Image 1 (tube, rainbow, N blue to C red):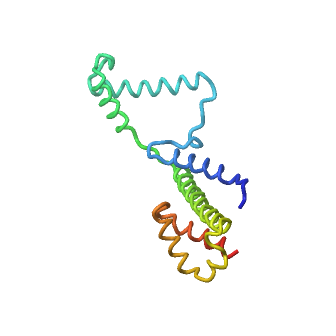
Image 2: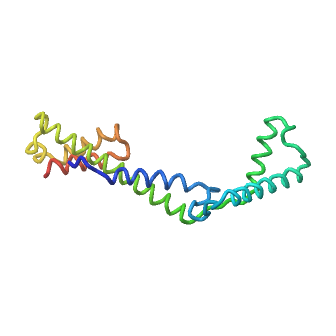
Image 3: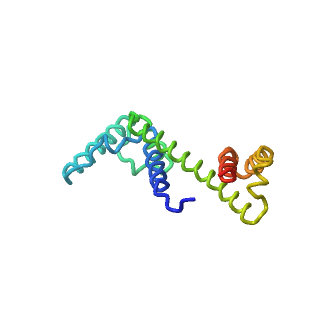
Length: 168
């Protein structure tokens, strides 16, 4: 088994980026360039503030600070629901790629767990390769059943890892 696996870190990072950018209403960072200057940032902020003030005027509210906190939360929720949701294609693709990379990493980990179990069973003379090969079908299904209780849907990966190590 390899001990140095740089792809795991890359897959984890890709999964995190993919999941973080996949939500509805979350704009993709590549689609919206960051403000270049402080004045540009101030302009964006003043535009958003003006938009929120217009929303408050439509609801007949002059000063939001005069409202109780529960009404503020309801009002803010209503304002956010009234804004158009932006879902980017690149964010969705990143989420799918991240999920696939994450699932691959989890499957690889389960496969390696099966290999480690086989290595330990052989090293401690619980089950030798010769014994396993004589009744491999029986042992495969037993390992699949036992690992199902621990790994759930990943049990085929564990059983295949065990089987692969015993046959090599």
